[in-house]
Image (tube, rainbow, N blue to C red; front, side, top):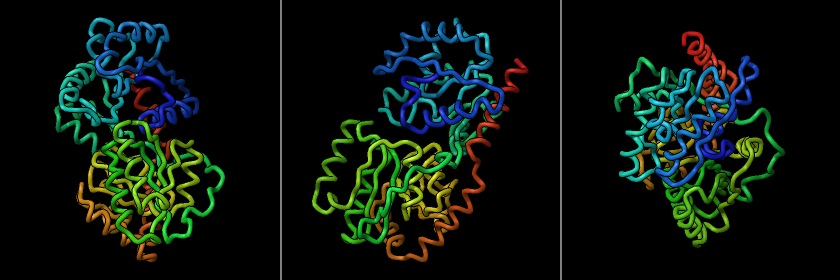
Length: 349
């Protein structure tokens, strides 16, 4: 049970599609039923119709995406599916990209839905801790992180990403405010012209107003010629960019898991970002990458300069990142864990 198009290019949707593709290996089949996407709170009205559609599928277990949970919560008491409900959370109640009024309202709706779930699956240990801190029961929580392998195999090589500069820096994330793209652009602009070519992958129109600000910044002197905007790409194309880059950066202020950090580390890239969300759980500052205080653009600039100026440091951190990434699960391992949980829920229902 999700919201809108299951093919949307964001971490939660990609997580579900990778799990769905692997389902047959575990004797399972995963089908998507979507709440129609519309401005909040309009999707609430679709709840009864969506739940009737779900009932016709005859599921063994209902997997409820946190992005759709609040829209179905009010309807579950009267129209609860016969199958047990397992909620899969990629964000805390209320979400992470909304204003205060919506966040408070949606948090109440989300909690309403989670009361009807027999199991809560969190995408990271950091998120699980946050969920417990806001009152969700740890006894019903389990953690199933995303896989470290971005694609079964990379696409064709994109060639030399440095474009005559010393370092090719990759950043993967949709253009939304919490991803900190303006901070990263500011840090790049403060370095010498020959330092970095920055490659941006992600949807520029995810937040139109923020995207407009990013475009204005890119047009400013000092950045226009050293930033390459790729837009949304397939997982194979992203894998090829990981393989060709020298380092990875994402200045996110809040990242419940940060799938792209794990993917970059698995590709042998040192990672750079703010010490926020799940990054400190993935990469140790000074070992597999550099994590600086949140919202400190001066510190972000200094850390980027270190990676550019010290080839040995960059290579050591990249090697350490690849080694640490081996401790992260693959998608097949994550799917095995998730389907194991779902099977146990189905057998005890």
